[in-house]
Length: 617
Image (cartoon, rainbow, N blue to C red; front, top):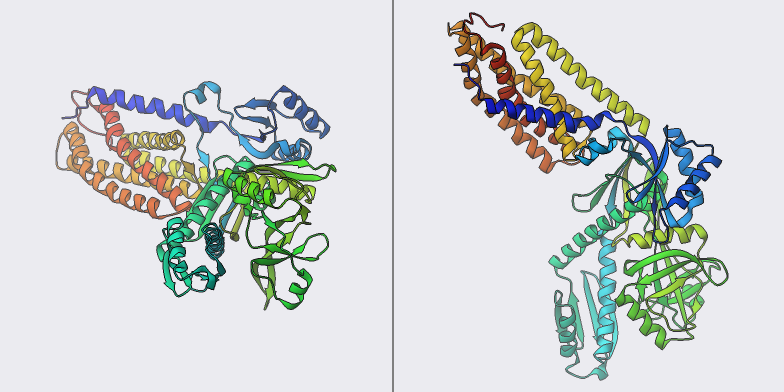
């Protein structure tokens, strides 16, 4: 007979209450805002708040509020146009001590936020922002590591007092150390043992007075993978400099990284900071005729030819890098003794000790800073764009080592904008390998808002047409189905909001599909009840049989959908994940509402009627 446990009513009421509570934050629209974050020298206090208000008044911007919220000073504004004006005014006046970024601030009441209520995270296509796909130059990462191995071998041989003629890289990922004749007959064996102790993952082969070092295939794969992982970490640090909320930075395939920055409107700043690979290297100046080396191409062993930025004159610098960008602990903009822009740098302990040892032994000699930047280029070949990259390596004017220094020192000779950019990049960390933009998509906030409006309209119309049809076709059970569908939608929105899932434009498609799956379940139940009634089964027994006999079929059908959804989520990327996640949540919600909620409603309507002769179906 038609029976329903009372505890399930309490379960349904609990689910309904929680769904309303956690879906409610989505009713509150976000405010266009400017987010101000203090860097190491900045302070978030009332003085800054007053200063920001004064600058906004000067720019003719009237904010909704200027308040310290958590670790940021949030300037809430009335429109996107006001947001842009405020951003331009504050970015130019607050300077290096603060990071100014565009954002969308939540308006959810404190009482609701304290209960964990938060709106769904909108994806790039709904909120606007930028989408980059970047390709990692793994060959450059390998070259950098091979150079480091070669330098480590030279240092190790010198420390072990084993004389050598040369340490050179060769094709096929090998490094050959040629020992001097006076090193002795057993020098090659001693050299192999010393190098194997310091670099045990490499392969060594001794032949006469040479030691051939080979990089194994497993080590090559590890170098390539580590380069991508370090780049992802560095990109996350750089995105933090932008102050972006809910960024997506993930690996794609073997050598690509996807970066999505929802809500970012200053796309030029985002691309410049994320894609920049500028870094510094500190090298000693090598004695020799640099002009002759440039003219003849004969560069002394252990040296490399560079061009001085200011004069264009050639200079010979050591191949040995004393310190580089990936060994920086901190970097901030300052001024030198002449009041010109400079970058105050702090090295890690290893690089600091190396710098201390070098300067202790070379007071009065010259050292130079090499500024390296990869510049994207676009050329036209046969009417088509061909994208490439030009690497610019410039030596700043060599400076004389006036005294001994280690971890802390200052780099001069930079322009103001270069000093600002370089400080940010060094704070974020150095890229293990250069990257090039291979795909770029920009979605404006107005287009994102249009996508939201159209997506909501599509889902609403799908619901309205479905509800109208069911109400006409199934009568009272059509009304029951309609209530179950509405609760299904509420549960999906609440769950996605609770767990911080990202709603994308394909997510709306997944939402509409979950409506269709829920409809399928209710159609199975309703048609099963009709079939039982046609066979002369009493109304209450027909309703009970309809739910019991359709339950197994519904479970099988939804299990198939779940398998597809999980596969899409695991193996898909970007939009596919958004679609799959919404569909999976919708399937679970539809099973609960179709089998449990609709049966509870049927019990409330028909269960207490003692002489039920017909059912409105």
